[in-house]
Amino acid sequence: MNDTVSRFAPHTYALLRIVIGVLFAMHGSQKLFGAPGDNPPVELASLMGVAGIIEFIGGLLIAVGFLTRPAAFISSGTMAVAYFMAHAPGGLLPIINKGEPAVIYCFVFLYIWAHGSGIWSIDSLLHRGRTVPAV
Image (cartoon, rainbow, N blue to C red; front, top):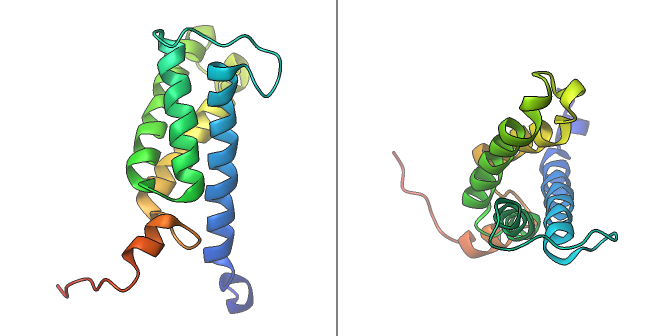
């Protein structure tokens, strides 16, 4: 890869994490608070309510980069469950059953889980100065 471009990889990854986290949190805020938009809030003690809590809190944690790996792992699993419970009964292919956002979120969160928080994150601030033991 061209070194001129690859030097921006950590910054591009941080932007991806932040934007995806904020968008995911907004999905949760629609379910929990009815905003943004004009959707009525869902019942908290329902499956959609639990999904909204995970989306809102998980999205915020991912966006700020705090407890990023656990938040991304749980969020990825939530999107896998959402796909198979809400979308797959409408057909196997995401393009047909309108499950593309769930699949995209699932795999982006899986990548974030594997990669970690990266720069511009609370996790990186908390771990600054720590040394990793040599193996």
